[in-house]
Amino acid sequence: MTTSEDSVPAVRTRDPQGSHDAEARQTPRRITPLKQDIIAIFQENGRLTHEELVNLYGEYQRSYPSLVARHTEQSIRSRANELRLAGVLRNTGDRKVNANGIRVALWEFVPEAKR
Image (cartoon, rainbow, N blue to C red; front, side, top):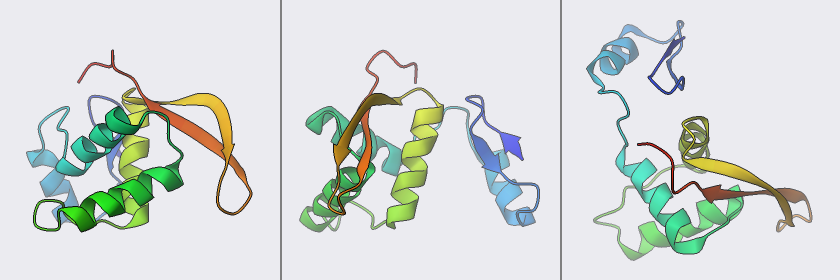
C-alpha cells in the first residue's frame, strides 16, 4: 500500500494500474469535495455518529442535487475515517444509542487540525 503525507492508505498494492496512476496525480493533503462536505457537516452540527453523518449528508444531497454528488454510505464512512487518520476528526470517547439500540461512538471536528 502506498500512503499519503498523512499516512492514509491511498492505493493498495493489489489495486489496478489505473488506481496507481490516479494516485500519482494527487497532490499532498488534497481535500476532496466529499471530505469538504463532511467537514462542513461536522462544523454545522457538532458531535455526530457515523449514522447521523450519513443521514445528514443524504439530506444535504437531496436538498442540493445539482451541487452535491451522491455517495454511498460506505464511501462517506471511508472518507470520514481518512479524515480521522489525518487528525481532522476524532472520537470524543462518548457513546450514543443508535436507531438499532447499539451504543456507538460520537465523532467531532478538530478545529486546530492542520490541513
